[in-house]
Image (cartoon, rainbow, N blue to C red; front, side):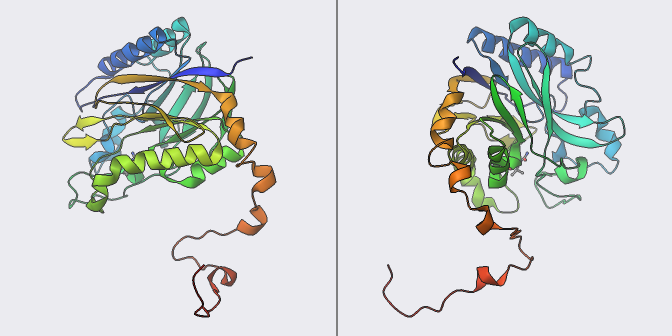
Length: 321
Ligand code: CDV
């Protein structure tokens, strides 16, 4: 049986602070219907796809921003998306801010099958930015204030394959793909909101697009999986967000990419069986990985590194190989 999925990367243009959920859900429905017209099995929406990227602002009273969070999913305003997905037979992936009944806040994503069934949730593990107000910045990045981190990367059976999820900054970490890859992930879905300007080191600004594709292409190739990276793009409240959403094959090749900074759907055929070309050859983990060598190295700066990793033989002055 063919395991070829038609996947849509549903990039969104900016969501301004005063845009209502109803307006945003209407835009999502338009993209979902475009996906149905293109015969998509799955439409992938970005991180925090229901609201503006609110961690760019500080509020001393964290609860003042609770209106940016969902207390249920689906809730009254998002139910139309679930209904339309089931009616069209198109699954979707949607990022949102989650406020749990016991008061925990997370940067979360939900994956929904073509029949409207919830496949799984994921809560962002790598929270970038800072915990406290930093007025020197042109804009804040207070994810570490507004959210608690998730504690696991899991895979789910869905869309005829093994599906994993990650969110934005997670995509820069090789561990993300490897932990998913070790669980057999064939399709990794990743939404993002990436400001082009990086205040701690503006020399990275010109490389924002390069780094975005670099990490996702490497993660796809080194783990033999499809990666779908989807942006919220454009000028959001004066902050320019990177677009360049992409669907990447297990070869590391980009199969489709967005050309605008607005609401845009690009589609690619993702043959999940292609993963085996890499998982069963160059990246046959069971055969070639050497976990006994990698050991329990944490390797964090400031953490003592075992001697055998720091002892290098003295150079004998011989010729370089
Ligand atoms: N939303 C994010 O996680 N954004 C980060 C920025 C802060 C660098 C990213 O890695 O794209």
